[in-house]
Length: 185
View 1 (cartoon, helix red, strand yellow):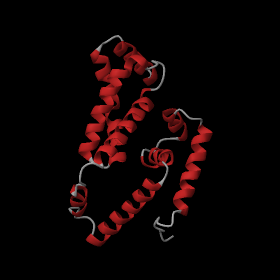
View 2 (view 1 turned 90 degrees about the horizontal axis):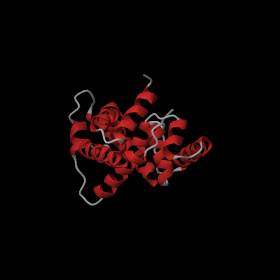
View 3 (view 1 turned 90 degrees about the vertical axis):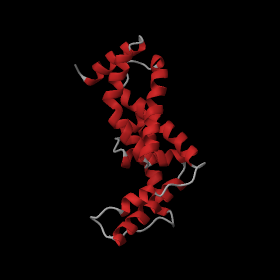
View 4 (view 1 turned 45 degrees about the vertical axis):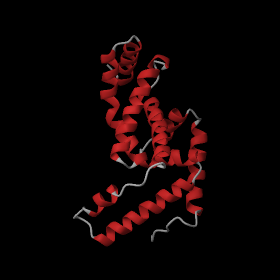
C-alpha cells in the first residue's frame, strides 16, 4: 500500500475514533516532527514539549483533516505553530547555558574553533531573527529542514511562485544585513 493510501486509511480510521490508527500516524511521523521542532527551537526539552503539543493538537483536529491530503505538511505546520508558542514562552524565562556546555565538551574541536563556530551560528541566528517572520520561517524550512519549495508551499498554503519570491527576498535581506558576518571565500 502506498504511503498516501496508507495515510488516508489511518486518517479515516482515526476520524472514526480508532486510537490505534492515530498512534500509527504518530509513530510514522514522530521522527520528522521531532527533527523539525529541534531545528527551530535548538533545545531538546523544548522540542520534545512542542512535539507532544503537536500530536495533541493533531489528535483534537483530526476530524477536520481532509483524508486525501498529505499528513506530514499538516503536522509540520502544527509543529511550527507550537514552536512559535514555545519561543514566546521562552522569552519569559532566563536562558540556559546547557547548549554551550555541550559544545565545549566536544573533544574533537579546539576551544577557538568552537567559539568561532558558536559566534557565527549566533550571528546567523540573530540575522534570521531580524527578518520578518514569513521570511525567517521559509528559510528555516528550506535550509534547515531541507524542504522543497513545493512542500513549503503546501505547508504555508501559498503558491510556489510566492514561496520562491519570499526566498529570494529573504536571502537578499540577509545578504544586505550589515551585521551579518561575511565569510572568506
